[in-house]
Length: 211
Length: 211
Image (cartoon, rainbow over all chains, first blue to last red; front, side, top):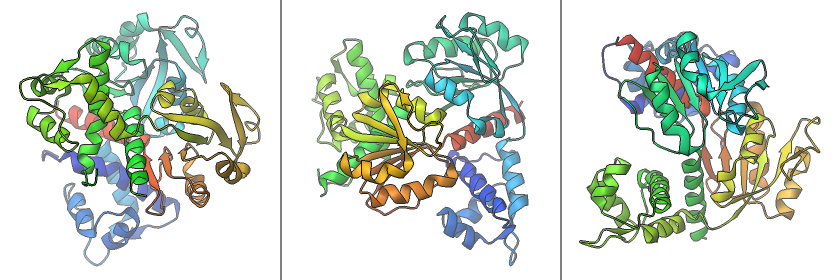
C-alpha cells in the first residue's frame, strides 16, 4: 500500500473493525454497504469510498464478505503483529490498563510496568512486575520493547518520553495530559481524558442553557 | 451565547484551557496570539478566529490576558458547574476513574459507584460506596445525579444507558466499546480506548512498512 490514506479514513477503520467483529459474533457473514450504513451510521457512499482506499472488498450485487473484510481491516490495522509493550506509571490508570484484557486482544503484549514510587516498585499486577523507572532504558533494549504506555503525572511525561525515545521505542500511547514533543519518526497516540471530560461539560452546559 | 459553535472549535477549547492553566502555573499573565500559537501548535489566525467565537478576548497590541481568558473559557466549558456523577461498573477502569483527581477538579463530583458483581457490592473506593446496580434508578432520582460514567462491559452498556436515560440523567461519559443509541436530548461523550489503540497499531504498522 503505497497510497497515502487520510487520517480521517484511518480514524474510521477501527470503528469498521469493531462493527464487523459484532456482526461475526452474531453469525452474520454477508452485508451490503446499505445495511452496514444503517448500523454504523456512515453513509453507504462513504463506506464504499473508505473501503475502496484499501482495494475495495465489495462485490456488486453480493455486498461485503464480513469475515474477509474483518480480516483485511485487521491486517491494515496491524492487529496481528504482537507489539512488546511496557506501562510507565503504575498508579490507578497504569494498573487499570495492565488489567485491561482488550489490550492483549489488540495485539499489544504487556511485559512489565515501571514506576518511580518506591512503595510500588517490586509489587505485581497480575503476573506483571513493577520495576524501578531508573532501569527502563536497559529493559527496553534487552527486551525488544516497541511500545510504551505513559500513565505518569504530566510533570514527568515529557522527560520519560525523551528517555523512551532515546532507548529506541517506536510508539507511545500517551495518557498524560500534555502534548509530547518528540522526533517525527516516533508514533504518538494521545488519550486526553480531561479534554474529553471538558467537552462533555461544555455540551451539558450548552444543553442546560437552551432550556 | 446564541450562536452555534462548530464541534471542531469546541474540541479545541479544552486544549486552550489546558495550555492557559500551564501558563498561569508558570506565572505568565499576558500572551500574544503569536506566542500562544508557538506553544499550542495552532496558527495565530486560527487562534484569533476560534476565540472570536466567544466575543474575542484579545486586545490589539496587548495580546490576551491569560487569567481572564482562562476563566472565560472555563465558564464556556461549564467547568464551575459541579455535576453530580455516578460511575457504573466498578471494575479496574471504574475504580481508576473513581480514584482520578482530575475528575473532581473538572467539576464532576463522584457520589457513588454501581456494580452488578455481588463480590464488589458493599466495598468502598476511597470514601465512595459501591452499590447494587439494581438500585441505580432510585439513587439517581433521590440524589439529583446528572452524569453517569459507563465502565461496564459492552454487552450491558446499552441496557444500562436506557435505564439511566429513563431515570432522567443528562449526560453520559461512555468507556464501553459501543456506540450507544440514545434520545437526542441526552449528551454522550465517548472514550473508545480500543479504537485509539487500533489507530496506534495502524500508524506503527504503516511506519514499519516504510522502512
